[in-house]
Length: 425
Image (cartoon, rainbow, N blue to C red):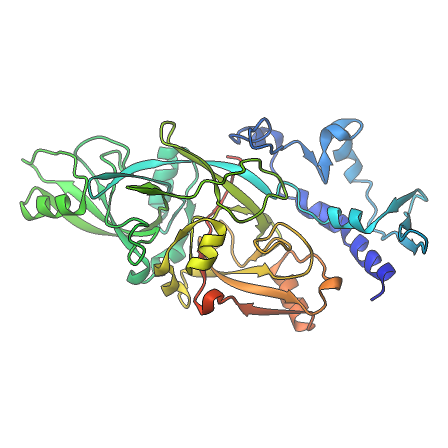
């Protein structure tokens, strides 16, 4: 395909792309609730009208919204100029403007591709030390609602997590009575049996054992697995296994924490690597992650954070916890397919190309925060187009325009813990 035809193809999808990045977007009132957005020290802005700031448009946001109903779906007619490689476009209203190849590349860049997401932390215990962690997903609706209300931040329902094998889970003790505190049920903080410092057994996915103080016992803080076992052996507490799996990534643990990104200036072009955390505040009890924009299976906008991954190579590149136990999910239904791009349109994806497409999203029966990564490559990268849905992937693969294969970095099974969140809540 020559350059002129390629421009026509790119411009023909532009109206649809513009609609895609605004459909399902947040209202000003919703955006205003986002901590660190708008007046954020990380430099993100919510007052966006399509592909530019509303303040740059005469009449502001109201004028931009009114104009959307006047956008014609008719593709412009393109003429290539030989002298300076500029192209001239004649739209349906006979107005003319010059568009360069660099302009077209910027048009296809997602707005708000990276935004700060402030997430509440909880304090627990491991081997006598403190653990700070977040709760993002639950296999059980009761726990999802309970924790959402307690922390005033939404926990997504992910029923597929119940299918995770024991090898992909760590065990956590939850207290149902005793000393009041920051625990899930309003009592002392949870007790963990591992941290990322024990990578062979650590998992952010946790199975749970309820700890209940027996009548006649004197409750006290238990801050280690050994103390819990000793109290159980003494008949002071009763341990009850609970059929629920929570995604509880640890942020700080004894003698360690998640990597904090050095350059905290957050833009749509912020590099993917070098850390996923902007700030950890153990006094205010919150952590600020970078939320990355992508596509749900039907083209809806989603945002996700990254907390841990396997194998160690990709984990190190992204600056997240290495969690080898997640490899046991590679053929398990608790993990869902996520399609990333290894060539094609330059964009905000982890490899520097367009944002990825997920096979499930919050609210779907097949949503899970655990993702089995597939790499998508264009047979002719110069003629790549923007893909937004699972249907797009299937159609272009059937046409032989793209190939899709499971990612095996370091010749290893590749699973990433990417909870989908609402960064503007």
